[in-house]
Image (tube, rainbow, N blue to C red; front, top):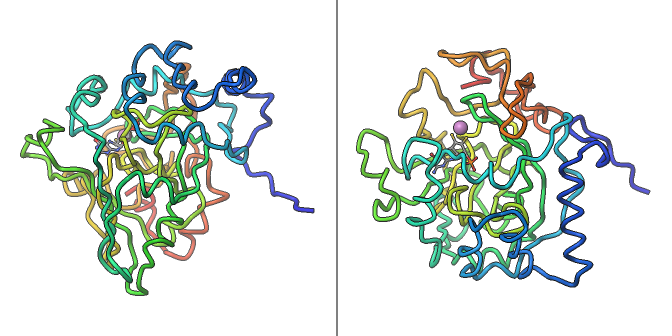
Length: 330
Ligand SMILES: Nc1nc2c(c(=O)[nH]1)N[C@H]1C(S)=C(S)[C@@H](COP(=O)(O)O)O[C@H]1N2
Ligand SMILES: [Mo]
C-alpha cells in the first residue's frame, strides 16, 4: 500500500467550492457522452467566445481534457480563478504593457506551425513540431497557484507535462547546469517586440535541479482546452513557487547551458529582478511589500507564503546553496 504524504498546499476537495463546481461540469459533460471536442462548447457554457475559435483550429484539441491529477489542488483555502478572469488580465509584454492584451494576442499570435528547438549541451540537438512534442508527452491537469511579483495572484487548472520529461527527451550532457528558455521574437506577431528599449527576446532560466523538480510544469492547456494565446500558447512554463515572471510564455527554444543565463527582467532591472525569484513575503520588492497579495478571483488581500506555499516540495532545492537572504527573492 502506498501512503502518500499529505502536503501543505493540499486541501480536501470538499473545501474548494468552485473547483467542485468545475469538476462537476466536467463530469456532467462526460456523463452526457461528450468528449474533448464537446468541451470546446465550454464557449457556450460560460466561456464567451474567447478560446472557441482558437480551439476549433487547434490540431491538438483532441488531447483535451487530459487526466486530472488530484495531487495538485488549490490549497491554502483558495478558490479557482474563473476562466474569464485568467484570460482577460494578463502580462505578455510582446503584445503591450497593460493587462488587457488578450484580443491583440489572439489576433497576432500564430501558434501553428510552431517549432520547438532543443539545443546546447545535449546529446543530439533536435527541432520538434509542437504537435509531435505534445504526442510524446504525458499530458495531465494540475491546479496551481500563480503569484505575480506585482502582488496579484490566481489559481487555475493548467494542462501540460513535467519539464523533467522534456529533459529526458533532450538527454543533456553533464556539462549542462541550467535550462535557458526563449520566447518567439517576431514583431509581426507581437508588436511589443518593436519597443527597442526592452531586451528582447524574453528569456528565462532554471537550474537543472529546478527544471527536473516535480512541480516544474510545461503548460499547454487551461481549463481543459488548448492554452489561449494570451496565456502563452502553445507552450509556457509554470513554476508556482516562483514569481510569475519566471513563467515564460510561447517558448520556441530550450537551451541546455553551463552558465547561469541572464533573464529578461534581470537584464532590464537587475536591482529589482533576479534569477531565483522565489516567492518570499519577508523580502520586499524595492518599491513595494510582498507580504500580501490580491486574489484575482475574490479581490481579497491575503498573506503571501514563503515559496508560495510549495516549500515542502522545493525548499530543499535551496538549502545547500547558501544564498544570501535577498537572493531568495532575486
Ligand atoms: N514571453 C513572456 N512571458 C511572460 C511574460 C511576458 O511579458 N512575456 N510575463 C510574465 C509575467 S510577469 C506573469 S505574471 C505571467 C502572467 O501569466 P498569465 O497572463 O497567464 O496570468 O507570465 C509571465 N510570462
Ligand atoms: Mo508577473
